Image 1 (cartoon, rainbow, N blue to C red):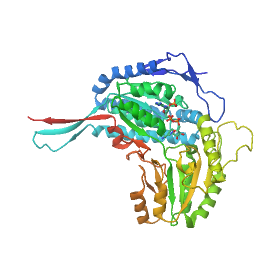
Image 2 (image 1 turned 45 degrees about the horizontal axis):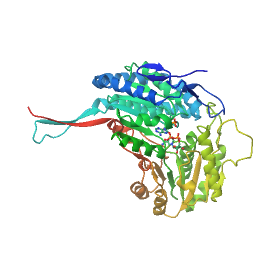
Image 3 (image 1 turned 90 degrees about the vertical axis):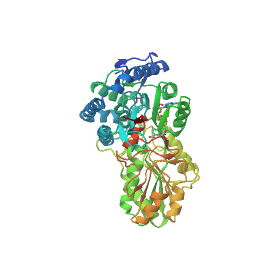
Image 4 (image 1 turned 180 degrees about the vertical axis):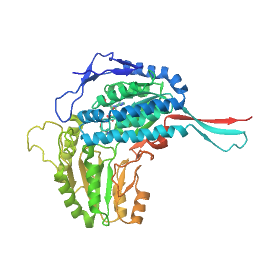
Length: 480
Ligand code: NDP
């Protein structure tokens, strides 16, 4: 079986621990796709040391050259599209079509950042008492990047490119469910000709090595995507050194459907954003709020669509929805479903447990609950699985009150044909992303991507803010 190493200081190296962990294909319980380093705090320190040593040289490398290297990386990524998509599907479980889309969107976002960098570095301002003045951007230093398993290559790319383009060096830790994609991306960056130490990749359990990365005083910026609980820990640890953090966290995203909506389009949005990636997007729809007059019809249409969804091995081109990412997710989602049933919600689509033998993988059918009250866990807590909680409302004000009744505020959507209702929603919803007649998972590279309330903190990813997170601002005044 293949054993993969860490990438530190431009060299592939084994962990000082001598220990390895396996990477399971979630469509096949008990399988192992490869072995990865169970890294230690010492390994992380070595990676940070390599990144710190490489920083002065990389910072002085002309931006045009950095741009060229990262454009070469994007070319390699494009050429590896099919191989990488297969790896993503094998270790994450999502369908091969979804994995290809993940690579494609990383290419679009990456090109956006590579193109932006040409005009990014300085902004002039009106000089009042000096002759010339401008704001100059400087790289912050070593950036720690911690990524999740739900978009194992895309999220890494969305953070790593802005960090490297702006002149920072990087230590990257992929999620334990999906180390292969991370290590594969490290290999592409090596092939793109980055100097040793500019990009480093260390695998291993976040609970044991994450702290070493975040709390190291040489790390000046931490970009994290994952759970709100870990995000809060990271912010606390980073505060000790005033290290800046970019946190993209959980959500409980609401889709509002008004009685004047195009119902077929709204059902399509619920299915797309509810069940793509088995409901494991941070922007997945997880609450569906229905205007009472159309609720019955909408639910009939939704259940009919759910029954047609083919759940199975993501590598089969005919599969619509793969397994969830691993055993922990599987158990957590089943627990949330049981809790909803115990609380009195009604399952109108989905599996009844204990009806068959042990499935080969971590498969959960698209699940829909009605009769959901806002104080139930299924309405309140992020499930991160293919589960929709449905509530009904009587007016746009009620819908907004329900939509905002959450500690989260990442994404949201409304389906309506009335512009005033749409505007009331845009103004009234507490979320980082507001969609009108578009599903909750949609985003574009030129727009910021991040949440409010407990869904995120720090400058959002994507767009200019994605680059700005990784720079310090220097005010320059010149006379003569
Ligand atoms: P985590 O937040 O635990 O993991 C995300 C990343 O953080 C992984 O790389 C993980 O490493 C790492 N990590 C874990 N603990 C620490 C730590 N103490 N310090 C630094 N890094 C750490 O998410 P889970 O994978 O456990 O998923 C749990 C829930 O989080 C999901 O059910 C979902 O609700 C939410 N989530 C949200 C995502 C989003 O896109 N916003 C993405 C993924 C999860 P390791 O894998 O080794 O544990």
